[in-house]
Length: 400
Image 1 (cartoon, rainbow, N blue to C red):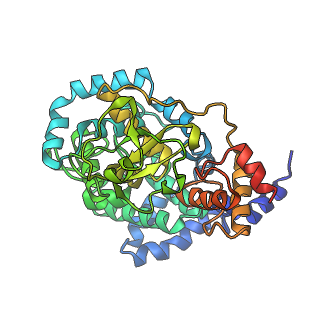
Image 2: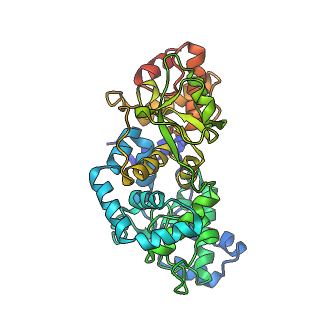
Image 3: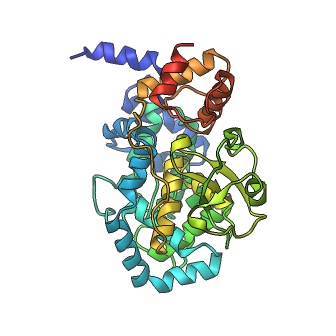
């Protein structure tokens, strides 16, 4: 077993894991952060009242390091959240709450099936909201996050200060519960979005995304619209690519209309016809040449605004379709592919950076920037340019 001091030094020396070890104890941090809170408009009396006796949540560091949308193969993430039970339960919940879903759709134009999918993925249709394992005091969670100074500490501070302001103004209960990241309600809206977009849709005189499904659905519909959601437009579609297709056309750097891809031999699966040939889309190849391929539209990008992970956005898209009665993906996932562990993903990013292909942060998360860098290197190395980090690709890269 490693000595605690050695573990501490490892955290100091490895910033790519997304957070550095705290430089001060939690009580001292609470005292020092008071200055920032007061400067932001929080009264000293209120600050001291809500932080009195506050302790850090030791489970938050583990939650940060083990987020499944970044730590598991995308097909594992999708499979676990889009199964027969989830689909059946979602269809039942839609039927039972049809009136409020239709009212929100009429008011904002957001597809009820999209909102139901987010509800199912975020809180299992509200069934986990009474669990202390999943829902914790938002104040404690956000103070713990800021104290740990992870990579997005500025964003965490913004969320924390907004929550303090909302609570001080009486617009949010001091004991408000949410996720370890501070998201709240049935559909898990973040404080920054809540402060601008949350709405009292059921008109009972208060905004309550925790106890009112109507308020939660409407608030998240408004959030999706602010993220670029286009009413009436599909999230995208599964497609097949012709032999010899240029995978360098994949990536979200530039949206092109469907016609652009159709002219290059891209086809919808199962012989389906394209709809609007002018719809702006990009080609997304999440599992390389041997996995499903998609043309993704602006609403998929809105899902990514809700949660940046592609695995999350694809799961929302897929569950949306499954709730409508659409079948599973037509193309199989490459399930026999060895998924790179965190150490290997960090090494891959470092190697791409060393070779001049990658300019992003080294965090072990292979998002769009890492995938683009990998595609550039694959083109340079004469490999299939699909941006998929298999163990075989990793071994070739590390031998450079």
